Length: 341
Image (cartoon, rainbow, N blue to C red; front, side):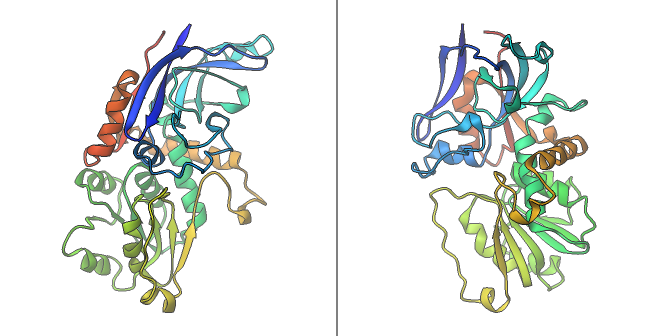
């Protein structure tokens, strides 16, 4: 029996290959994938060849062992159904809908602890957003927004929208989002933000000043994926403000103007990455607890409304082209899998 897999052959080259389906080993189960979500952040860096080849992939995820050298299988948002189990695995797993941090493959073998059963009442379309929702939860944990604060989010792609959706549930004084694409700003406004601004507008700087009554922001999230957003993010801060950088720039270099207000205004820059918990949280929090919060936020926000494109797995190359060449049209792109091989 065979399966279909998505492979990054080289920068800007994606292929869907047929290869033998893996055999079940002791203690393993077989997942038949129903759909997988493409990360418009990290996966686009891989697609464009903007990831340092010497860098390891996320070693905390069994499905992503290895490095970023081509050819490469990469992805981490697969949703499917358990099709079969090894003789030493509880047979009640068969038929269960599960999520896995796994590349785009129609079938894969893994251990039960490497998949997460979908909670009751959460559709597969929403479950595909789990990695990005967990990231958004992590951003709030690291940024620690307080009641009454003025907050701005640069970037309204998938992660930015989810971050804004969580922030919009808090009693903030104001919540402003920034994105250059009208469709994303429209989606952001539907979340109930105070304003969603176009950074390319000639009045952008004045609009930002007015949005925070001339006081600047207390907290800024930079999740646009663009190093060019860092200077405006710092400029948006008021005295003692903090900037949480959730973007991963890959091999793109960052040039910052830190010779102006940054030093005297005591602006703090923090990094936030979902693979680990910030040490101060480790006394009470685990990754499992954070994941439970992410599932509940998925239940409450129903993020599948951000899916803009659904393509069959065989058209994976076209899916990446949409994200790379037509970002103004795309928010979340998902791949849909044939029901049987």
